[in-house]
Length: 185
Image (cartoon, rainbow, N blue to C red; front, side, top):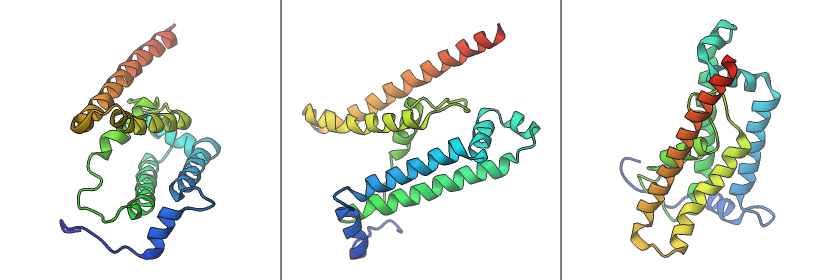
């Protein structure tokens, strides 16, 4: 983008993003397809179990003979593809694309994943819980707007997200210690 803005997107792309299909926004359709495909990969394919094994303990996965480099490469490529799809679906709804459009979403993504119960140490997570966390996290800003906080809403949004991360990390640490204690018995 070379620091500039992009305007005049193709009309077909803008119409598809705004109109949707059968009265349902295109972003909802794509989310259902992505969640279904990801759930299928994680729960029905051996690749999903391999991803969980690498996430849980890479050394153990290597000892089992799994090619951890290829599995990690796949997960990064899959994440990149999903980011591109999300961009193609969401960005055309805007009048123009500004240079720093995605800045700050990293914290929201990490918050959603951690609040959704994905273990910081890896190997444990639930796709449905992450989807619930996404819903919860995306409702924070509108709720603060509804409470008429004004210009401070963005700061409060970050503060609430930070509190959610803190609670999730502390809960994960407690859960990890409790499991370690149970497994040692």
